[in-house]
Length: 396
Image (cartoon, rainbow, N blue to C red; front, side, top):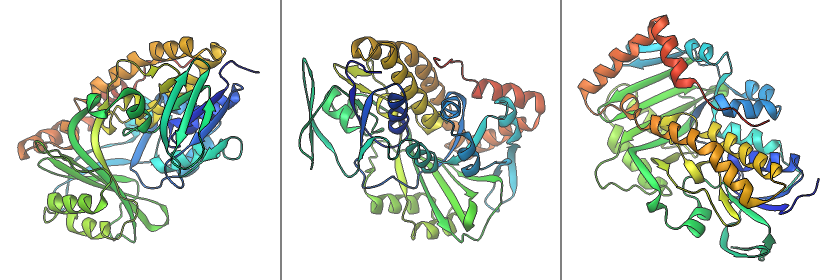
């Protein structure tokens, strides 16, 4: 099938970009994928994957490989400074609430599997950056840092929270980035001495949490979240400063903090960023649209950033197919259908920082007390059904 505006440049090879490329190719468009990094990124944090993103993965035939890569978390365990369990819950309640359509896996593994769905079938360019976008009545002229300028009919920015496409077309991120008041970090390491297979083990200090999870092959994944001080700005691209800040915040704070920080010293996959949302009144301008975190990052507190990125990419591709490539019609339909759902997810995430990083010892005790309620079957069923229910139907 041939469409109007068939040549579509997608910027970003994380989650939304490969998903969009896959569905555009299925619908008869000709996507080209450009990624700033020299290769697929590794690292990142463990994600819980369910809901609308899980349904998109099912439609792509990915569930067998995700089941192979994923982990079955049996327990979320909160511990004190001596490692004693003080609260937690059986993770089976999350699988029950989603009819067993729930899996945990590293975000980079999901990205790799998505890219495998398109690898070798579309033009993909790594280590390249879009530097200019000029629109005219017939299409777009796109400038690159290294490659010659090229013509495309449409362009979609799928390049994440710090989107360069959004900066070029919509202006500085400061106008649309909404901080939720935290920073987060993640890394993995080999031969860490403490392992509790099947348990996500968390330890809290006032204003922060550190957690670990045992991976296959003798590796362990670690996750940090901590409150952002007033006026604090930690660069998202300076690993030396990030490591120093983590040592300052968590060093000497009990439990396994010092051991985890020693493991961090040798890690080569550190992920670090602000916990922020992107809030834009419009996800498109002219022939350029945004998808995934570039358009509507819900923050990791929402727990569905990857799933929403996949679902949004699917909705956008479907809208372009239904409109036979007419971007004015398709972009409007994409936003009209998906934005109310995303807005609700963003609103819900604002209320969850207290659970991850209570800001006082009293807050930690209160969080632990309320978490124990999840050991009560009826309470757990009601809470998780509301938290994990996606009231959104993907288009056919």
